[in-house]
Image (cartoon, rainbow, N blue to C red; front, top):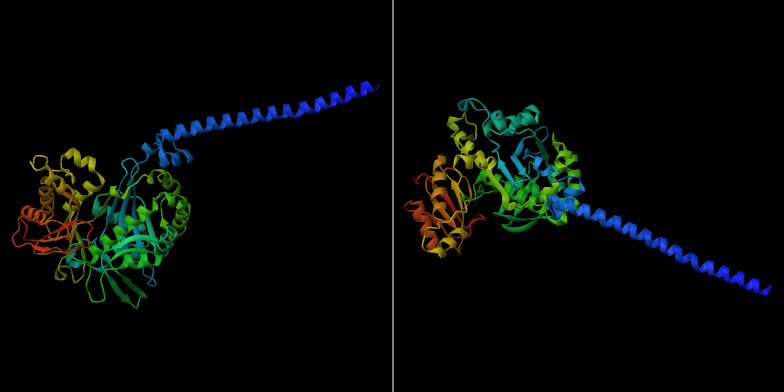
Length: 453
């Protein structure tokens, strides 16, 4: 009897000791299955990331459901940006008008300023203030009227617009954090009627939202001085300052640490923008925007002239040059077409035929900016061609106010040999030289005067 009891206890103990082992074997199987599933899923995800180009861009594209054909199917994104000042009651003048484009395949982007005084009427001699492009939105309250006017001036086929009000700009810059920006000049302006006070020192600074509004509205100082001619004074300088600040904003937006802020940025945009954009379509471009470098950003302003007031019914207007504009639009938006025509100029071309390779290399490292201070667009292209043929890097071209005398401004560390060589290429006697630090990012700025042939 006692033996039977002992045997039963042993059997019970043996059964108890076997059960945990079975459970452990079962859990091991479950964990292995989970790990296998994760490995397969991870492998599929990694494969899709690779097919989508790899890196952060490929990962984001995969997360939002894109495949390797999505990017190819995306065309160039183009939109007309309009900055509307709301500080004057009942008046909504578009102080900033700019065409923005982005191509996710070539990773090229463009910011093209439209001068706010651009004439949209039919007779310059009978010009009215309402004929200026910045008045269209205030008169019609229809943004497409401005879009169509820009299309007429440029030959583009823009379909989308985005009106950015002051509040949106302030909120956007604050969301990104202060923007590091190299303020081109000392700014000192006050307008008590608009409660507008602009005070900046030249140099690298951190700009918050409120300061961004002030910076972008600056045109001239209290004493009447404006941006220097090598930068582009008055409205030309103002537009350039706007483009360069937006370039800094773009550069900070696409930084890795700001990717997590894209949701809040889109939220700010959806709440503050007046636009006909479909934000669901816009989101398709975001995974590829993280690859973008501002080195691939082209910035320009429409070329043209400011006629004398006695020719324009005493109304200050900007008359866009149709021929120069057509050429500029090809260069900025249709480089492939221009290449087929054989008219492109490679700004990084070096003169390989020269026997002095060291001189050629140093030339290619010099960034030259050429601003046209004449009414003839062909003179600009002529000088650009001559400089690039000699191996110089023409990093930027543009227009500035009309001037009779050609000027060369350069940074203090540019050698006399280079300056003398550039002077010979320009070929103008008695060139005005300025060897002090320029407000431009270029090493040398050439302002073409009417004395240039």
